[in-house]
Image 1 (cartoon, rainbow, N blue to C red):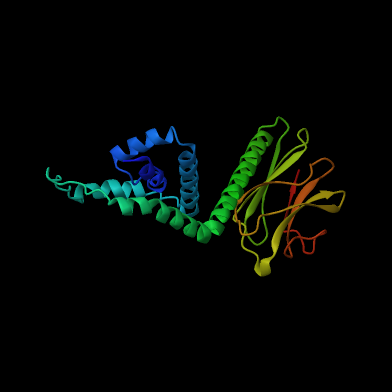
Image 2 (image 1 turned 60 degrees about the horizontal axis):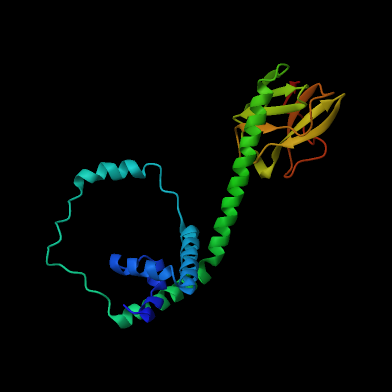
Length: 248
């Protein structure tokens, strides 16, 4: 294989389409040709981005189903000794990297938006995970604080909640379970009761019947935490009677 042939194999090498002998010879060529090495890196990065755009998480039971099906799978017969691999004709081999590169560019143009969305979704998921872990750590510290107080009650209309507060930490958490869905996209809103005045303390995440949240603001000066059903987006002051009030 001459040097001209080697220069045409960047696409086939990046896609893993070379035979063992050809790949070994091309590896030696890459060590001496920066242009080919750069082109291979670019093609491999494009292939990786395309794989990211269509990547899917396998079902949790996939391994179990595969292992269960193995006894039913018939083993393929051995390949006859006389079988040979027919090499690509030089002309076809010379054109393969150009077709591979063109295909990558065409698919990249179509899948570019998907790749951006996938990367954005992954970043969003990492942010949500980080926030959830930080909140879990804070709630855990709150529940084990020496001055932590716990008050639980059932709510009108269904569900129950527990308020955990620590004045030393200046934090309050709300643990809820079984909250029924509200009509007309209304939301559950929490309030600190301070000398008869209801101060907004946060919204329960819509669509969740059970969970944990940290309240906005601390329990200092509060004698209770109330929960009401409010219009979408919440209110600056309660628009309906409390479904429940818990001491802090």
